[in-house]
Image (cartoon, rainbow, N blue to C red; front, side, top):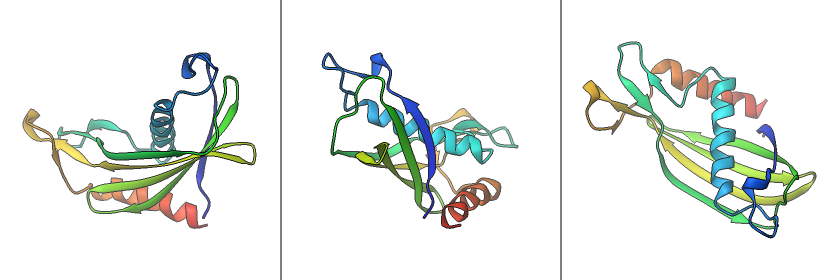
Length: 143
């Protein structure tokens, strides 16, 4: 499977006093990579549907397993793979690399939600156009 890949330079503010990326920042990096994947396929993380209903993609699960530290000024590759798409959720996997070395692996589940009439957020089935774009991303991984 061919993943979607972004590169990101480790900035000083990403690190602790030892110059090592703070563990919590991997979650920010996963989110950044997810946003780039969405942008590439013409999708938004938040916005309004054609009928004016506000939507978003809250995270309902996230995990990361660390193998080796990343340091200030490292150039990281963040590989994103869509594991599966259901009617309401998107399951993604992440691999963090510095060159050929794997540094960490993560996973995240996001759910498509709407705010009907400005009310409380609730999960909903993805509109057909959003589902089709995510399916195209999934198909591109298999190419």
